[in-house]
Image (cartoon, rainbow, N blue to C red):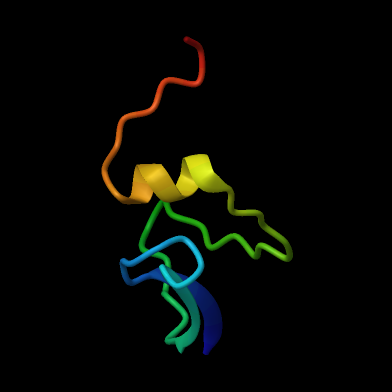
Amino acid sequence: MMKAMVYRGGDFGNAFEVKEIKRPIPKEHQILVKVNYSSLNNVDYERFKGKNLSLFA
């Protein structure tokens, strides 16, 4: 098992939850990468909602 941040919709404070999920098994020519830390900001949130935000205006 592993922890995963899952998008479930809603406003920024409630849009994501950490869940225990089954660890994926890599297929041929794939790898599984262990991530110890990550960040989430408003741009990430807007992209999850489907907005195509340009980082360079």
